[in-house]
Length: 184
Ligand SMILES: Nc1ncnc2c1ncn2[C@@H]1O[C@H](COP(=O)(O)OP(=O)(O)O)[C@@H](O)[C@H]1O
Ligand SMILES: [Mg+2]
Image 1: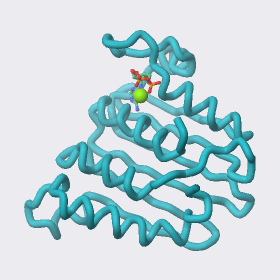
Image 2: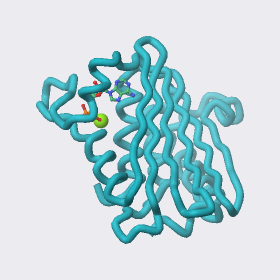
Image 3: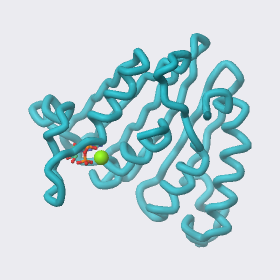
Image 4: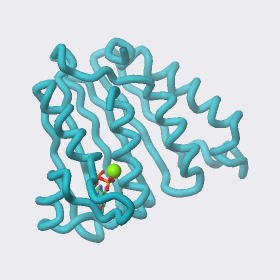
């Protein structure tokens, strides 16, 4: 994985597969340059025994491929920057994955194109779940949610190309001032 945004894509795909109705994404950049990337869902969750094993690359419920690498790779990249990953999960309630990246480290991945990644995530699951994103940092904060814009669209799909483009452009405009400094 070359960008933090691509990890987001992977972690959100887990939430979608877990049958979540809501996926809430948060990015927080603190004044010391530590970036928190959080993904919280209300999907099926994982029990404690599975959770203990999910941190190892040999745990997955997929049948097509023996090795689940999404979470282990996220952990590896967060740790390489001097950060870490916290995972909380309860069966029947959901999962909260929180990765910390030390963006001042030379070994930290760039954030990448977060607005385009969010637009792809929403386009890929236009009906369910509802997604929200919240970005904050020393320069300000923004929030966006599919639940909020759905009524404005009056039935037009979130996968409609013009809607996707509008989401990408408006997110980029709002995210750039907050997280633009760590995108490349
Ligand atoms: N948000 C989640 N909710 C429920 N189960 C999850 C969640 N995230 C991960 N898992 C479980 O952990 C496994 C490993 O995830 P991951 O490391 O991303 O590998 P992969 O997605 O390739 O299986 C998944 O197959 C799934 O069973
Ligand atoms: Mg995965």
